Length: 113
Length: 112
Image 1 (spheres, one colour):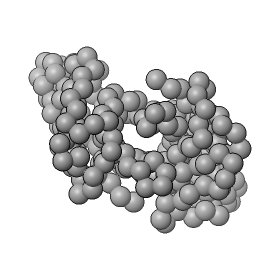
Image 2 (cartoon, chains in turn cyan, blue; image 1 turned 135 degrees about the horizontal axis):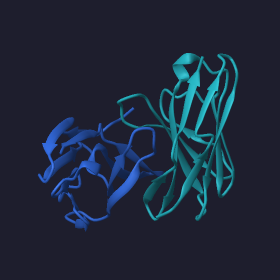
Image 3 (cartoon, chains in turn red, orange; image 1 turned 180 degrees about the vertical axis):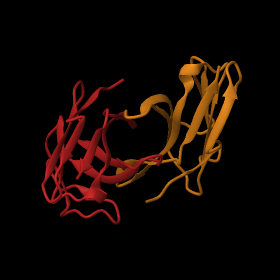
């Protein structure tokens, strides 16, 4: 299977600061990557589709100005949570697709104090 | 956001028993994927299904793509303690960009 990495694995930040999460495809090129958010004991909710070289597509209800996505290369997508607040604390997971199959990164746990 | 109906929500089973879970939707999907997620980790792909009616096995796991393309099931035979975790189905659809909608999850606990 394809390998996806995320960095950092966990981060704690103060309210009002911005946090950047990186998602890398290690052994394949990903023109499209996906960002999900998962709250405790809940399923994965798609936040946005990250497209290499173009703007991301956000799901309904996800603020594009708050969750900035950049997909500058075929192996790297970044998600920046701007002006983070405690309610943004969650588990953020990215994925890349190979032949219609999604492979996930290990996730990043964000805690905003 | 949209989610698929997955059942059961949770289950306790004895080690050695078989387990069955399913996912249903009102929408048609082109692919179905099944994942297992351990606490604090990303989902790991178990089985991928690409064709209606397809039945695929991966060790003790067997999954089927429903003939109507609106459902899928996963069976685990002879469960072992390490099968504990949360299992998610995901239906894949192409509407411009290919993307997946996830099920609500089945939490499995195996009693030794």
